[in-house]
Length: 314
Image 1: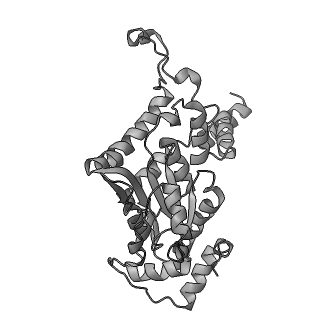
Image 2: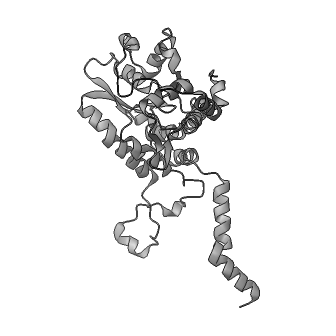
Image 3: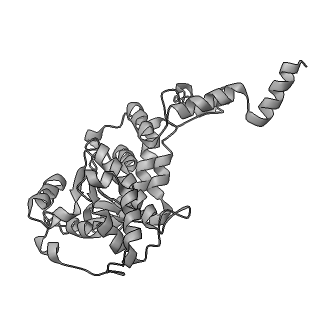
C-alpha cells in the first residue's frame, strides 16, 4: 500500500470517506428545513385540496401568557353552529412535542431524495422476490395519508365524538415552520398568530411560576433571556411568513380595543364571537403578575430586540 493510500485509510477511519464528507457538506449547504421539505412534498403529492373538507383552526402564540386561552375561549363561543359546537384543544400533550416531531420527519425531502426508483410501482408482491427491494417506499400520497390519519385520529375524531363539527388546536410553542407543515396536512387550515407585549407576558409568566419548557427536557424557560428568545424566535417567523400560509396576525392588546379586530377574526374564521366574553375574566392557576426588577426587564428587552420594536413595543 502506498503512503498516499495509507494516509487516506487513516483519514477515512477518523473522518469518513471523501465522498461521504462531500455529500455531508452538500446536504448542509442546502440548509434543509421543515419548510423546504414541505415545499418538495407539495410538488410530489397529488392530493387535491379541493376534495378536502377539514378546515381546522390553529392558534399559535408567542409563548406563554399571551392571552391565547382567552382567544381560544372566544373562538369556541361561536354561535353560527346551530346543531353542534366548536372544540379547540388546548396545548394537547404539550411537552411531548407531537406536532414538532412529526414536522421534523419531512426535512429530508429534496429534489434528489427519495429517488423515484424507491417508490413501489404496483408490481405484484409475489414478483418482488426478483427485484431490488432494499429501499421500497409506499407512494408519497400514502405518506400524506399517514400524517393526516394521526391528527384526524388524535384531534378531529374525538372532537366530533364530543359533538363538535369544527375543531382546532391552541399552542404556545409552535413556530411558522410548523404552520407550513400543518397546512400540508390540512390544506384548508386557518392560522391565527397571536402576540402580546413581551414584558407584560413575562410579568404574568413570573407570577405563573416560570417553570415551563420550550422543548422538554433540553430547553427550559426559567429566565427572562430564555423567555425573550422564544418570543423573538416565534415573532420573527410570524412576521415574515404569516401571509404566506394564509394566516392572520392578532395583537392581543387590540382584541378588546374596539370591534375592528374581533370582526376581522370573525370574518377570517367564519364564526360569530360572543361579545360578553370580551370582558369576562375566568381565573386559572397563577393569575397574577410577578415582580420583575430592572435587571430582568433589561435582560428581557435585550432578548426581544429589535423585533419587539418592529411591532410597537419598547
